[in-house]
Length: 112
Image 1 (cartoon, rainbow, N blue to C red):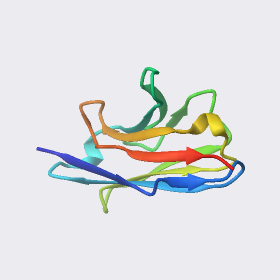
Image 2 (cartoon, rainbow, N blue to C red):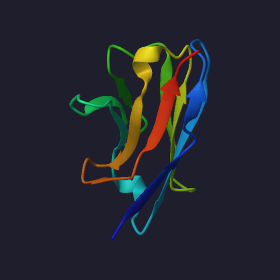
Image 3 (spheres, one colour):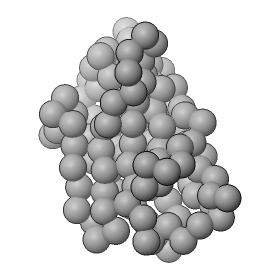
């Protein structure tokens, strides 16, 4: 079965940047869309960004212009570059493959 592992989370000051990485194994990544979700305590999980097999991207309104999703099919990797981070970006971020499988998540905390 496919396995996804996120990394790159941590504590960042407002206005800072982070790159989240997602490594996939056990599947042919190139045939699936990929994406990132996030979930804050007490809130529903929400879509953050998606990328198709052809590289087309889509973003939640709250992150447009600040986050960039990208993929490297040969390396079976997907990335989320996060800039101008705000406290409201604080959440656990989850990588997904075709909205079929999610990783365990990585914590992003934006605070002074």
